[in-house]
Amino acid sequence: MIGIILGIIYGNTAGLQAALLPGVNFGGKQFLEAAVVIVGFRMNFMDLAGIGLPALMAVLLTVPGVLLLAILLGRLFRIQGNLPLLLGVGTAICGSSAIAAISPVLKASKTESAVSISAINILSAIGVLVFSWLSYILPLSDTAYGIWSGLSMQAVPTAIAAAGARGEIALEAGTLVKMARVAMLVPTSLVISMLLSRASAGTNGGKRTAVSMPLFIILFLLAGIISTLGFIPEQGLGVLNWLSTTMLVVAMTAIGLSVNFAALKKTAGAALGKGAFLFIILTVVSYFWCLLLLNNN
Image 1 (cartoon, rainbow, N blue to C red):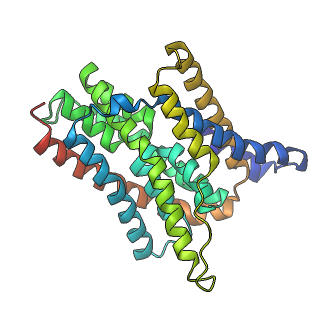
Image 2 (cartoon, rainbow, N blue to C red):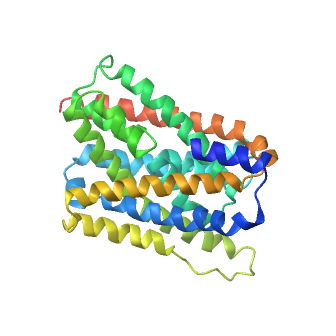
């Protein structure tokens, strides 16, 4: 988020020199895609199988539910373009990484990506503070609280931080559930691509565009498989995690440098309000799911 803000300030005050454009474009695309691929190495599909049926069902229901709600809100408030769906995937799956992954599928503009990423990161930062405060107040068991954090928080780091506020048991449960949400990135990308292909038939005389999956999404899945097979040592995973974070910061800064501030002002307020609404709905629904179905664990 800081990288995007600094990029926007510099790009709209000092201006972006022509000599910097190739590097900015490379950082905003290739670095972003590479960072998403490396996130896949955090996955372990064998561990995900142990989260339990109630938690798994919550993931399978809340992810598409939030995406549908985001689309409906976009139509209700007449928000144009890809912003509603980007906020939806950022809320439902894994924050900035999900937005970065879905943006190429939607052919979203850099302004749409920057606005949605900024809104999601602001809300995620607020959320982790609220969750940490509520961690010992709410009538949830350690496991149920951890699952609630994993179901509700947008970004992986803040989900882990919120769950860890309750201790090791909550941390383990929250991390597993959050990784299950991250795994939804692949089917979500495929479904969106299929829907876009179907929608194109209405504007191309019945001829659909081919369903496509960006290469980096496929590599993301392969990274998860490699991690599951145990080919990456623990120290290697730590290095990859650092590399992913660093590349994401560079990519966010590059996106900020490419944003037009006038266009940003027009959509920032709507994005933050809509993102907050989605976050609150997801949090409340997930809380009662955990309270009623998972609180005995």
